[in-house]
Amino acid sequence: MTLQDSHISLAHGNGGRYMRELIDEVFARHLSNGTLDTSADSVALSLPNEQIMFTTDGFTVQPLEFPGGSIGSLAVHGTTNDLAVSGADPLYLSLNAFIEEGFEVAQLERIVADLGQAASEIGVSVAAGDTKVLPRGHGGGIYLATTGIGVFRHPGKLAMSEVREGDILLVSGPIGDHGISVMLAREQFGLRGEIRSDAASVLPLTKALRSVPGVRFMRDPTRGGLVSVAHEIARATGLEITLEEAAIPVRPAVHTVCDMLGYDPYYLACEGRVVAVVAPDAAKSALSAWKSLAGGADAAIIGELHATRRLGPVSLKTEIGGLRFLEELEDDPLPRIC
Ligand code: MG
Image (cartoon, rainbow, N blue to C red; front, side):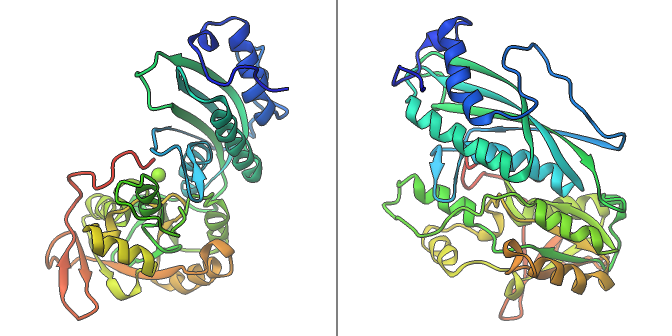
């Protein structure tokens, strides 16, 4: 049984029968698990007696569906990936949906189904939720916010404070796919690419590094891309980062679109990649741990941290042997990509 109405109306947010039907027939139907109780004001969570990790994120991506994902799967991957790169196994999510009056119920169903599938693939339960309906013109169709709870499972400390001079940077796969696929899906350039978003859970990648001693820090290069993560590490450690242009994986199609439209792939968002900083003697083991996974086949060692100040905090050794200063991002090259 699905909702009888084809579009969301303000009545779906009024606390009465329409809202109950929306929650039961769209949200609960796709998200049902042992924990979610749509009739309760709050739920009891069973948490192990270990370090609990907590994070939250909001999602406003346009378009709402794009090759390789949707705002629904992104709301799961974005929040659970922040737990994963912190060394945690995600356990529970809360979900807030802000839906605009007039939004098509069929699209809402696809988005919520996508969200439910992404959650069940990771083994995370949506344990609590809320829906609000905004008057027409007051929302971009739908906004989502997810809060995640996980349990820390990495064998050692993971923090920028662990990073040392001489450490090595790795990336788990090609960069820029998400930013370019979402941008092309907007059709504003009349280009229809075959580039799919890399949006995915990075949990298999972060779990694989638990058996590698010497992993110092991990982060997912989302908004602002690889360069922004590099700047964050450089700022926190006082070290300089040199990236090797020839080593950084970028798909040829992403390169082509970037060249045509003047984007720099190093600043574009990924939603399924990990940047790791590891001790020099851990780099090869970390790389082979990633390469043995489907999601890490194109992983690469891409740079190192050192104390010598040359151009600035983050520089790129170009393929022709020059050194290019990669400045910190100022203007957002692609707004609303997550
Ligand atoms: Mg993050």
